[in-house]
Length: 127
Figure 1 (cartoon, rainbow, N blue to C red):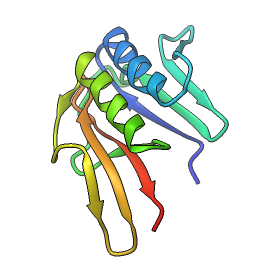
Figure 2: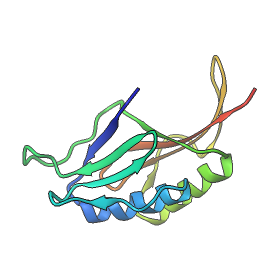
Figure 3: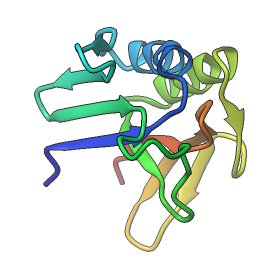
């Protein structure tokens, strides 16, 4: 459904370090910085990117927005979470664990990245 997700940051280096660490736990390669200073993470499913806001204003976070990254196991979600905490992320929501929804169960691990964006590692539990 999505071709890419791009989020703002006021510090590309700090955010790149954070996302390099958490995305490596999920098997993705280090981000690539282009000539405009933006950082891109490529996968067969799409692109995740970081940029300094082009309007010159400071980065703001979207209230109510969460970006979810697929994790193939709960253990990978936990490794993602630990890597995030070790690289400038902060906790939010409940501790990593199983959440039971109306149609399925999920293993979720939530963080805020160094810029304050809410992100999550998501493992879909087979019922």
